[in-house]
Length: 385
Image (cartoon, rainbow, N blue to C red; front, top):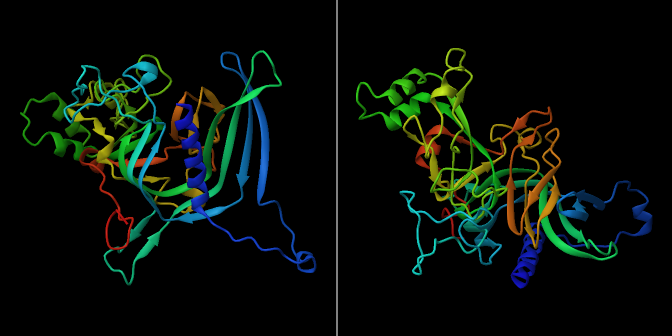
């Protein structure tokens, strides 16, 4: 585990370095006198004590960069080591019918890495079939950083060991594409759209007295919405065996026990009572889906510019043991993001400039039910540059 973890740390560092390359050239003193400014790189040091986990020190290197990138990779694989089903929240592999898949020895199959994204890409290419006039729409990043976490020895405060590393973004916005095979961490989004879409999707052949379809028909003209999270595909639950979060999940949807809501004045009090998710269904509408259905997701708000529509607090990390990272989402009262050994992807709710909580991912109801196609990330083809 340790050797693979350090290789993954190096891979994370290389990924950051590949986002931008700058040739450094000395400026003569007489010319330098004409310039004022602040440091391009700053370093922050902090500490945190947890009653259960112990004491930590953190060193964060802040890179004062505005990055626009179109990046493609065959595969992003982080946190490759042995896990077993159920241990520490490790989700099973399930087939398209949500049946658990078993190995030849009878054990439950799980993915072999915490994060596996094949055909990974950031950004997109519009008009990609016209090599003379393609339009590159980059993934935008502001104020990226690299942070190291150190665990203090409980018996000797002068001894500390590296506990984890993370790469984060102060703000991020744009298309993230790939085959989302295995995900570990927090991926939060919202499904939103007119109830008529759910009705048309599920009630074409329903009987006249189908209760679920009657309820959906009442909501046909109202906008309905629900939060989505990574799920255990076998149960529709967002947790497993009391773990903080799911590891190696490959399904996403409306967790069991949560519900669709609406701002419609008449339906508002009624819909949450009727539209409760149970066993991956809400009013007969499928509410859990393989993550591979969503070939591209948009991080942030696509209807707004970068300053007003970018998501905050996103990061990817790797831990050798549990680490309580500082929560940089801007949400009032949010203090720490607790992570366990292995890799962690954090694309979670954040606070916008007015303090309102926002989801980093939004799916319209139709694409949530049918899948989100991949945007083109290459000139001349959708993927595989």
